[in-house]
Amino acid sequence: MMNTTTAGQETASASVPLITVDGPSGSGKGLLSAKLARHTGWQVLDSGALYRLVALSALQAELSLDDEAGLERISLNLDASFSPGDDGIDVCLHGEPVAQKLRHEDVGAMASKVAAMGVVRAALLQRQRDYWQLPGLIADGRDMGTVVFPQAKLKVFLTASAEERARRRYNQLMAKGENVNFSGLLREIEARDERDQNRALAPLKPADDAILIDSTANSPEQVFAQVCQLLVEKQLFTENV
Ligand code: DC
Image (tube, rainbow, N blue to C red):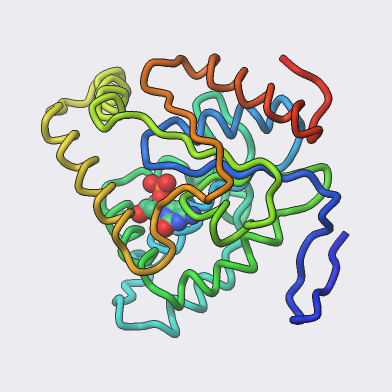
């Protein structure tokens, strides 16, 4: 299934279906991607989890951000696998479920730092492309449609207002019994958007050919149905919901 381009880079055959789902944190990409993976039976890639895994390993090994060689080694050797879960994408590292650990605040903060490093992004680029295999791939992240898979025939850019994303996160945390402050969450989300959109490397922005979907006023089921319709229109998958 892999072809070698003249540049010597490996790319999956264009006949393997691919859909990219990019957008800011909390827009519902993970849930949408998991639903799409279950519907199509395709592989799913949570690229944000790769950055979080690098961060987790770096914290566990007590690596400093100056240790570029160490961070590159970790990035090149991640043995991560993904599967669709009930409320998002499940992640395993060397076969062990790690989704809970990846959600910790210190891992998220470290992930946003390693994600801004060229050496880490370069090391993860081919690893991400390696997930593009039969029967197809749903790729979830920030730069899937712009950098990692610019050739994708269907690119979704999922957004929601910062208030709505903060409200969803607030409800999730309250449901887990955590004591949270809405305005604090909103400030965090706005600060993260600002960092993601304005960083020098692979900033968060829709690809020119992305389809923008605003989930602020729509349920996850409505967004899913809309994307399934697009899959059929683009002749990437024949069954509609
Ligand atoms: O989506 P997330 O919160 O799990 O992402 C974790 C971090 O990785 C976040 O700081 C954004 C960054 N990221 C990125 O730079 N590129 C991606 N394709 C996915 C995530």
